[in-house]
View (tube, rainbow, N blue to C red):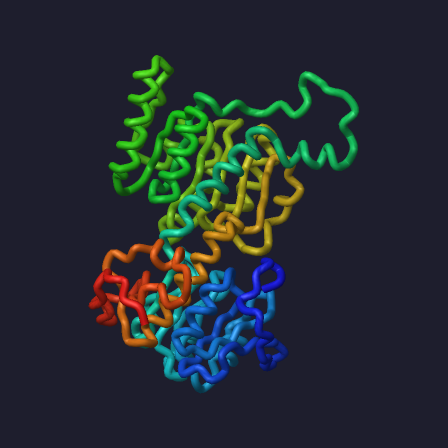
Length: 407
């Protein structure tokens, strides 16, 4: 908790040691035992769990926990677990949780490609995630990576720190002007659309996008901005929904990736598709690492020094493919797209709200207002229904109303 500068509570918790790992125990007399595999962010999530009569056991380790350690922590009695995207939640762990009397699991993430929701459902375990609070933060990170690549910020920063700056030169760190260029969005959901709007409105970039589903709200906002430019005698932006990923890659000066990760998007960007992109294009990934064939990307960047990649995620995270860290034309950050205080605090609160709602016999809220949860002033102001359960329907947990019922 000290690493993020936020203590969940001022009272020093008890500790227990299992398999060489230290676990902090909060509210030891709580009715429900909830295992939390990593320290989360902000005070509200812990206040919420303890307010809802949970004994909370939090692992102090900053390393990824193996399945064996999580099984040991679940033990013979456990009501719920809050896990992380670094863990593989498959049949073995959901079986162990069910055997221990568990009824709920939530990942502190919106993506759940590491969670076998079908296995959880077979074991009768509700699975929650944390949508609705990552959009702007992740979009801002994508935009940050775009500009960092275009203006060679990381290279220039290293140059200054090495005290190499001796004289202003006309050709020193020449980059790319984004104004009026074309942004390609692959996956135009909430995050992809937000990036598109930020770059259209901020840099007057034209926008092309591919998504299996038409995003009419995104298109309407682009068209409104286009009309406003024309009315003010400025050059209007252009936008278009294209028929394929390849069409986007061929047209765009900058490509930003925002698809879900599944069998159809694994290595979506491979050697063949890299080769159809512009030689001086920028490729940004704030989705999931395996969307890109990382080894192919390394080789492509080596062969094309004016091509840039901005990566927040990696194929074998946290490891990088050989050669990636040595590329001057790659900007790499450690999966921090959602790492703003408000966003990560909100994710923590939503995860706690998911599991505690199920433990108290409540199902998923219909049309939950996520802001009511994450902006609550105190634990007793957090709505009682679960904000986001992925398998609520097959488990019969869709009965809750959107009313802000409190405990």
